[in-house]
Amino acid sequence: MFGHSGSSRSRVALAGALSVGLAFSLTACGGDDKDESGATTDTAASSIDCAQFSQFGDLKGKTVSVYTGIVTPEDTPHKKSYEPFEKCTGATVKYEGDKAFETQVLVRAKAGNPPDVAFVPQPGLLKQLVDTGKAVEAPKEVADNVDKWWGKDWKAYGTVNGKFYAAPLGANVKSFVWYSPKEFAEKGYTVPTTLDELKQLSDKIAATGSKPWCAGIGSGDATGWPVTDWVEDFMLRLSGPDTYDKWVKHELPFNGPESTAAWNAVGDYLKNDKYVNGGLGDVKSVASTTFQDAGLQILEGTCSLHRQASFYAANFTKGTDISKDGDIFAFYLPGKDTTTKPVLGGGEFTLAFADRPEVKAFQYYLSTDTWANVKAKASTGWVSANKGLKVENLSSPIDQLSAQTLQDPAAQFRFDGSDMMPAAVGSNAFWKQATAWITGQDTTATVNNIENAWPKK
Image 1 (cartoon, rainbow, N blue to C red):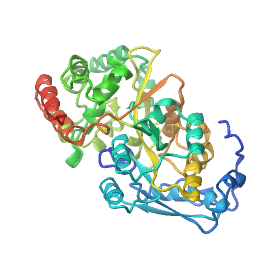
Image 2 (image 1 turned 90 degrees about the horizontal axis):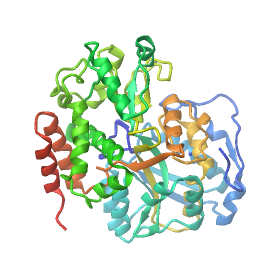
Image 3 (image 1 turned 90 degrees about the vertical axis):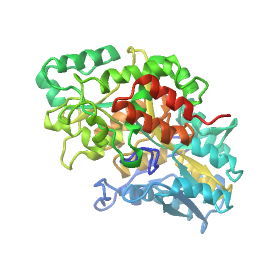
């Protein structure tokens, strides 16, 4: 599972106008190279306006170290996207990908041996790193770019104790429902635009004798996390972003009425024998089915709907037509009405531990719309919430849908809740109690158990 770029809590399976003063052009020469995902990587031949980096002085011969959980093969297009920066400045980016990034970056920071730049996949981890006293605030040039190219919600996630530290990097959308466009066309189903319509569609499919939904929450030690995404999505939809924020921060109890309502709404789907588990078994089979396998049932014709993030596209076999008229695609999990657009997702943030000119210049580059478009052309399965990202530069229809969703002016983005909760809750009690809930535990016991797991202040 590839979610927040290599994070153990990030469900690893797995933004145009131009910046002021920046001219952006891609000039491919010769044939396009292919990375391991099959995407074109012509960024080695990219040209950008190098004058933008003059504000940082002479950087020739300097080195910037980058530490991240983004590993092979996803690291290839990242490295390619740095080549224009290296050509312009004469500086070198030293890239280090590590599956143990989340624990090791803290160890290194506390030991006084941090990298120049880290790609941090969770606001909670970002705060921990800032609390070491080793991180440095983002330079003004980066803050100005973030003010221009991202929404205030994204900047807030990179802010700790009122100070801005980290610009957003990549992003993913979790508020998606996978379906078969061909099946919808053949059976006269329409994509729902409200939660009521989603329920009506589920009932309509169930009335045919088919199970409308397929689901799986198996994920090794992380089994249960897909339920947390369902609950978070329904918290956002039923109670709104402000209440969601309070819930995540534990300003509202986990066993309060708002949380309980969200769990019950999810139960209307995942614990409903009439709705699940198409092609896989009864309700309890949801717990024993891996999240990777569950949605494949849509192509088998044994279910019609699977709620899972944008990164789920990686689970379909090569050659599957993933498009709005193809074998499989996704639609936005609707809100209570058509006027609201809550979006649940994740992403990474660029945090620096040094303020040398070359480090500032690299941070600046990654915060531009220029880099977002270079990166978009270099890879598939990657998007950004950068408003300057040209959707047409994304080669994958699902990536384009993700970017359009993130860039929608009505979108109210909220970060994955369990990734922001204390580890005792977010990656422990929440997951485990969700699994027990699927296999028969009632909602009251579930929310009480999670509430009791919150660290006492």
